[in-house]
Image 1: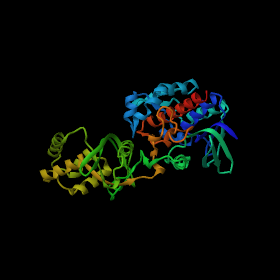
Image 2: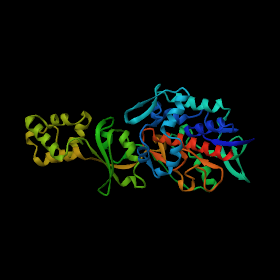
Image 3: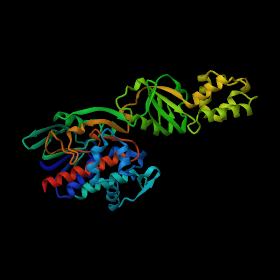
Image 4: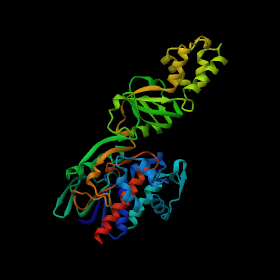
Length: 412
């Protein structure tokens, strides 16, 4: 069948794009490889769906890599308040939480999925489920797509909105990038983003389950600090995870993970001088007690034995027998607990995908391919990614709406 537009991928960007195209009266088919739409959207924000972030344009761009300014034009046409208005006008009430994050009042991501799905259905967009696109070709001015049932779909315009490779169980397995590559597009290396780290040795494993709050974690390469984050993290059976760890993983560019160190400042509120003063006070006050009693004042229980072992001071050492040099060793450990990184976890545990269709080959105003007329990209299939906080979904909504607007303007 010949359609006005074929949209491949029923995620956040694909549904908002298909809905707006159908609303404009176009014959649209939305093709989804899974049996339901928005499977990844359902699990965003821990199932609550962090729709967007009510911060400034400058703040959004500061949280996006690798070429944030590429989004400025499309953000000028559809941005945060437009996204909020879109959902609220269709009955979804939203709320603002810490860090300017916007969530549904219901705290239920399924409500967001249902709204987008209904938006498509209400305007008579056709949706094909359990359908994978096996090939895409050009036949003159027409695209011809073949699915896994040997059905063919024809259209003048195609939108690829298949997402990245993270959480492959939801259907994000790099299909769109493969389609783009088959049509001659450059695909920048796909890597897991916003993802935990595997660490070398067993240091993290010995502290498995310990959650840390209000700590500073930094990444070092060749004894040079690359980036740091303040907040919460956790030790696991494989290494480290948590909000600041995920954020750090997004900022390492092409650095070799296995050559990096993670250094954790357990007492960031105290500089070395103030921490030393505190240790002196504690040592003087508890001089006749065992060293373990000092560590109980400083660390979670599961870290006490690890610390004592790492700095080579037995737990039963009487405090007033500890030397100034040993006290310095303790201070340095507290300010710079160091783990060697091995690798990131896999796409199965990554929140987003780093890499994708090169922005060098996409028109920044319309998100149309510069190589293939009437081929468009939106969402995570493109080499654009952001930190947590609603920034990635705003990319999806803005690019999905922007592509729909470009196609509508072109065909009118």
